[in-house]
Length: 532
Image (cartoon, helix red, strand yellow):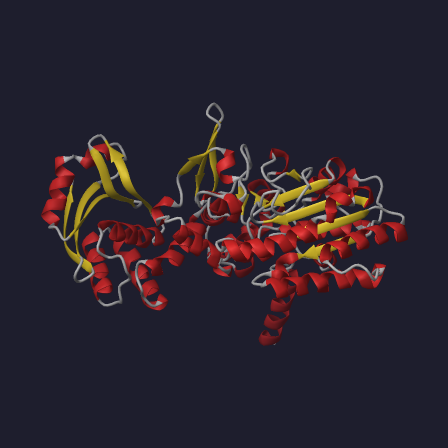
């Protein structure tokens, strides 16, 4: 009897669980199957009524495909799917238009022949509906023919939706020759979008990166880029207000499962998944993929970064010679980061448009934006991806070391932490370029960043620069690093330049740490630790 009652109780609880649309990007499926949907339809209404050609850039897994699917349902006249949503009260006329919807994410990792095959398959799907003229051979000819025939056969202007327009180009953005070939194919495919203007009701494109209009959209110079438009700041992602209003029960349920308060859950969600701003001012934007996964799993994990680090990012960091500590903390004008990626002279546009750095502040007087890594999930994910460039170790060994190291630092035992690092570094294969001090500085920066604490390098003081500053909840460590020189000499420099004075008002005990690296052994040689 007890077993049966327990079974019934569990069954009822499962049926009452919130359904999270993990990996589901089709608006109609979410609505018909009663999945959680954060209402973005007010943005849809204003977007389709006041602009005809629209481009939106957002990082991967930020809801671009769901937004495109929402537009598809809207322009297909599926009014029943929008019952209870904001647009139901705004829209007075529900008109069905012919919709050509192209998802270019299926054309990733494609060479020239494969890309043409992908375009062929996408066009065939609609040619089976609207037909094909014998002389239409190239992708642009076939797209133009489709638009005109759809218009003629239905008597309605045509809607063209292109999701992830840049997907075929992202993996080769660092290879100029291959990029040029694939870019020409896509430019050819998109070229009819201006010539067909009389036949078009609406054109919407999404992507991660921003390629120049010249290189991709040919003469389509009337497209409206709303990526940094304040009115659409929250069109993708989930805002803090949306969590508090539309997901309050979810927060409470997660708090109950973790046996903490709802306030503690909100703080943890904010620390891990918040921090995105795509214009200024902007509400706080949470990564929707990570947020929904955390609620679905009932725990905090690295979801967005765990879903795949693009290889092109790592290659471009190497191409531009960007050290791990240089990824965040930038100031720039908008043209320096909201810029075409194929003409970029720094890594900043790619980092910003891919979601690895985001807007944190804006100086209106100077027209300067402050950019930094959004949150803990991204910072730790980035450092894990970059660590193999400094420590050629197997992942399980590194993860185990970091876990124990975290406990050492949490216990304020820097001596044990350095001893652990010394042993770890002496028992693993070493990477190249270990004969200069900067290598070890960046390696320490990555390792300490993995612990989730604040860490910075080359911190300015009145008399010089501190090699590294590590701040935990209980202690601030001022660290000087030397290569093939004694720890005593490193400590002398700390004292001579009185580095601790710079941090006297930090409110934490200050500890001086002098570390000497042995370039022959490729590990820590000796160290000294003194409390101020």
